[in-house]
Length: 312
Image 1 (cartoon, helix red, strand yellow):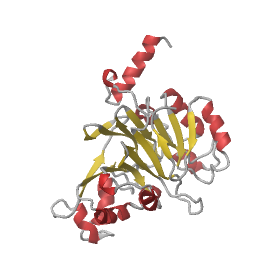
Image 2 (cartoon, one colour):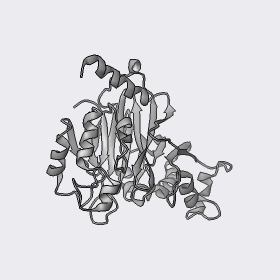
Image 3 (cartoon, one colour):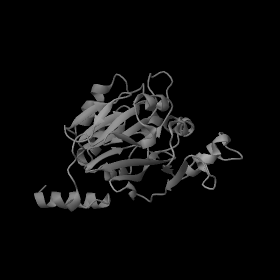
Image 4 (cartoon, helix red, strand yellow):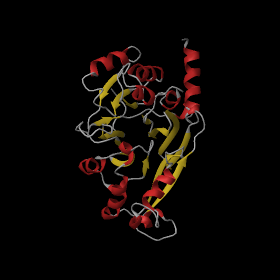
């Protein structure tokens, strides 16, 4: 592709993400880091915590992306200071992405947390809740499963800290942008995960970016938009190439699709997470499928792993 045309395509992609090419900073390695709190899925015999990621900004643990079963223990093991947490970003509300959230809400006051926690998630669809219905079911004063924690979800009651619940009602291939402060931005786009309302997330700070695919088949190629030129793409690898499981193929990306996204989006590093037993032992096969379109770094995620954003 001629240089001019390549620059035009890059500029269009950046504008879709709400980024001006003129102001795009160069990512300095170490400014942003991703720690994998849970690299597994819903299985009970995979020796892994379920899906969760912690984003460190300037050595402070600022953002949680999903918080599946086992994540709360690994959050403690990470050495994160809970008072530095700004936001929780949910991709969707399958159990393996959200089960430990009540434990987080209960535990924060014991750590001296006294500010507003922003909680983002998708809107409701069918039997699957949006983030408001999810938190209501947990913490509603009358009917909540954990009604005794209702003060934390009730803006009219004075308590040590509050949650601000924000539903992301994205239109088809529309990127939503939220500024947490002057230097920390999160972005979301709706992705296809069968009938489940789901989001992919991107975190940006100081010229660095990391994108989390969430669970998706990406048959609408929405993830391509959000992942454009990202320094790290955390892609969920819950299905083998040509997986014999029909449900796996419906809900998740094949390795060739992950590789196509990483290659066309010019991803810096590719991290394969949400690993399941049906993919264990097939890492070479998956990597070979990805390599057809992507020549960059490929990492297979494990619990507590740290990934430096930027650099090689």
